[in-house]
Length: 547
Ligand code: AMP
Image (cartoon, rainbow, N blue to C red):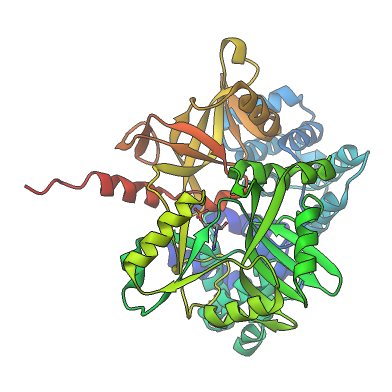
């Protein structure tokens, strides 16, 4: 496929909002792709060149890209930034700039989809001392071969700011339609393989191939997630349910095969090197080849330490040994997805649990199996008294559904008015905070869009503002006056006193008295709260009072 055709398709898709039309257009394109282009297309149309389980990252910030745009268009970087400020969208700004480049400067070689992919692979594998120069050279090369429209989408891919309105759901439907396979099987294969590119290739071979997908060690899958709910609602229709403590730590997935062990964070980043103590404990405790799911907590004198303490260890690259000595980390295992060559995600939970206790001689979570509401409530209070976050209720016969926030796992914790929102912009501070960002613009998810709903300026220490500035300063994609916009990457948990309707934000709601609580480093931007969640919470608290 020519990259030009891909860019034209993106531009067409961006202009339509109907789900069925999107699926039809995608299905038509997918059915005509070559074997090599099919997986590349299915990943890039979601704006992700590499499978989610893969450690590969493009690893170029906006700065490098803007320098390359300056080089290719023969302009100064300041001019590029200025244009970005005026146009707003980085892709559109680069398109405009490239269209003003003299036509004779264009190369005549056509850029193929595979050429772009090769360049992205090169970017991902370029590391070490001279890496920035090398990366700049690669970006310049692809941009000088690119037409303005191609430049638009290359920019969006490089900045990981690709929003053309195609979500994973639409893509799954389109793959099913293109190859006349069962959409439920496409979804299943997606959960197991965690890569829509590979899934498309399998779908082309039919339902049976999709059905036979398997988990393998060192190819992490998304974690199963929990919904909020009530004990009585979960008990409805169930004789017994499983109750476990909800540990306030960080989620992990641990893979072991033979003597090799690897640990992954909730965002599926490998954290083996950051947590050698935990990896060692699990290696010792587990006999066999496994993929297990759990939470790691930090403990002092038998009591759990705050969640931030655990996350600091996940981030650590230097001084790991010293950190491991000063904070005791304890894993808690609550599920098993794979054991000695057998995939277990379709096995009922109570059987998985038996298998887990069979292979792990330590660290398996305690459970209460009960159908009695009062007994479960007492267990919940005991969990809180022991310093845990609450309890998790799980259906005994449920499957393990990677990435799904379904009704099989329900979290019960004290009511907290907090939302997890994506940081999309900031405003420079004033006075002694003039060199850092003083307030942040936060957005809720609406399908694959991010709609701003709040600004937060309180709850930060000077130290936190300094740290936030250091991690966000390279993610600025445009600025205007004192305001800057970021490539969305991090999630803030914010508290508030009330949700109000507001014309000031695109989402139609605003938070009253928002305050920063913490950076949810364990959460990907896909896991932030949605605009729908915000609307639901508004409705819940603004129900008409019965007369
Ligand atoms: P939340 O982050 O509030 O959506 O709650 C779900 C998270 O609770 C999971 O992703 C785990 O990190 C954590 N968790 C703690 N204890 C358990 C448990 N026993 N079972 C499942 N998840 C748990």
